[in-house]
Length: 180
Ligand code: SF4
Ligand code: SF4
Image (cartoon, rainbow, N blue to C red; front, side, top):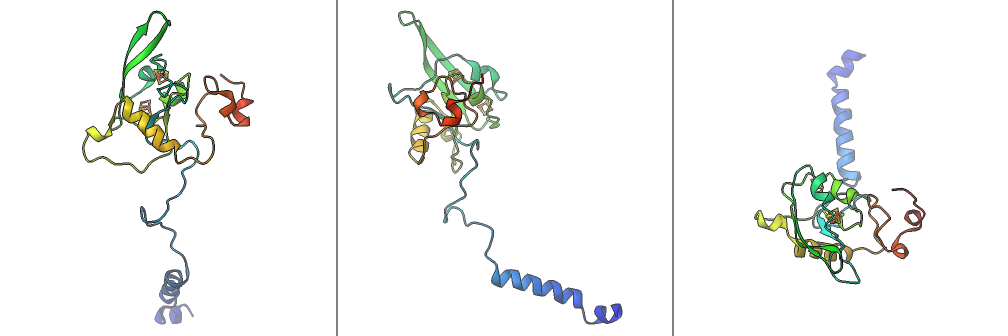
């Protein structure tokens, strides 16, 4: 019997029929990017950097605490600030991220006490020069505007801490969060 199967190439024919069946009757599992809509990334996907724009001031929420600079393993965040003695607070004068050096670990967004920095879920970005992927403050704020305009529901990064963010904008789960 097994000799007959060998002579008649039964296994090969079975394999070929399976290939043909998949080819003719099954939908492809791959997606033609970017012609077709791509998959929505999972919450917490770490994509293009952005500085969250404060809806009240139109500026960044950053308070220049320098935690992100210290925690960044790639040392690709550069911040300069000045101190407003009257208001007793720091104001950033420079906030740059060299995205080509970033390893997308997400430490910066995790450590930020006011949820000012985020790795958005936007992943479809390219640059033809190094400069295009070197984001300064204005570019980072623009990245946020572009990202948030595509969001249909209130956005909450799962790595953000609830504190420092307007409570009414938090999803219930985060509002009830009593952690750090
Ligand atoms: S994601 Fe990681 S490597 Fe990239 S800027 Fe943030 S801390 Fe640095
Ligand atoms: S951790 Fe947040 S608030 Fe502190 S410097 Fe970085 S972005 Fe600004």
